[in-house]
View 1 (cartoon, rainbow, N blue to C red):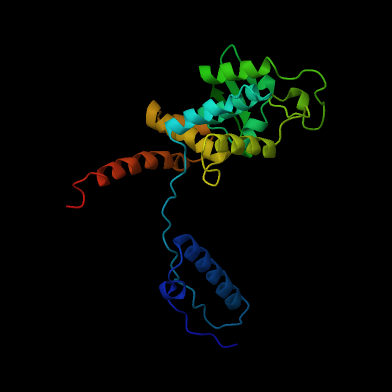
View 2 (cartoon, one colour):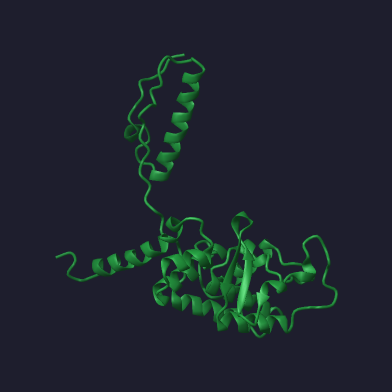
Length: 253
């Protein structure tokens, strides 16, 4: 087996995006480590290979005006599921729920006396989310028309579920994604950029930018294991400050 002299990563994969270079670097290290461990090569030429530093990717999110537009188009008088779909969009935009968390909500998880909701997040961890008036009103409006007869008592505990499909069973992830895509399209928003998870980003960003929410409180609300994950929303705000300065007409003089 003839090995070519190992080239610096900048020459080996020049022109690639940092994430692509990092992935290739990892593959190269694993490959040569295996050859060395199997005694196929006398030395590991990939030792010391540096991984490109990856910048933090800013989350995509809806502006406040686009969020209002999405809510306005969702409550369509001609749609028989308008109360359900409006409640879904409202919870996403106000509470920053994950898709699985929303689908998993049972009616018993809602305490209207305290206006709070209990959800099961990642790692089967339970957390409490306090509901604002918009959420409480939207949920109550939906519950008033939610089917009660013929709801399936199946393995998904559909009879306990808050949100039901037209087949009277717990709504699925796919159906919720379809609803969100449809409403985004009606609002004139790009579904290749926005999704259910982007609505979670939107909720977090709006709370941080307009509500002066403490970063620790935001971490608790979103159910993040690490504060570092939540801090990306502070970077969004800082990026906007930077862009404001760059947009000054004197910037290029």
